[in-house]
Image 1 (cartoon, rainbow, N blue to C red):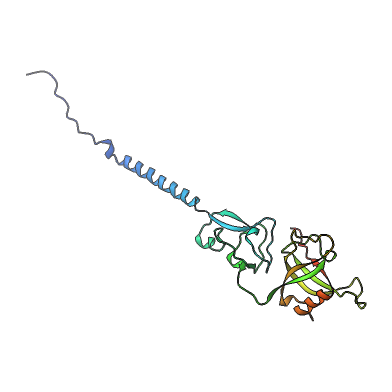
Image 2 (cartoon, one colour):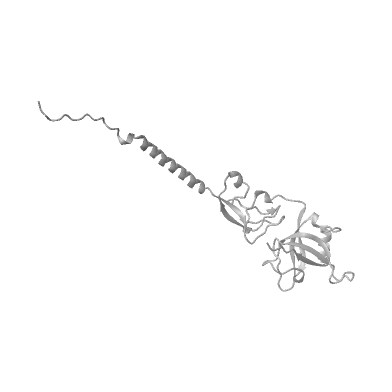
Length: 223
């Protein structure tokens, strides 16, 4: 018989690809990738909505136009929050007006404006000379309208009658100013409850046509 030693019997080792730790590691990597992809996809879900330009204030009853707005990209936490505001893909219809104030830089809420008619609101031209209008007047400004009857000795030159209060300027001559000192007109939007006591809209129109209008601008306080 040979004196050579017999080989030891060894148990066949399990392939490494069957190692439970390897499977666990693969699952952790896949879970991390899935979570990362979800976070990235959610961060990309931004909504583009209309916001008021930084130099614009939209007062109640003011005309709303697309030129007063700028598109902003915003990430909302829920669709319900996003639905509160006007998408930048929406066109602002002609005749739209504000029903409540929205300030500079603010997002435009859906319930802050309307394009529905209001029989309590009327636009009327107010004949006025350059001397009767502030140089700083712009569309959207809030104003009071005073009337001084022309050639009426019963009125002192420095005294006028308040005909309408807190009305809004919706149109001015091209360029927004009054040049040359001549006569022209500003269009104001008047709600019937803004007429001063004892005044009606037809009386206002008659008075400013036969007299002289002075428009006084409301100056917003500094913030």
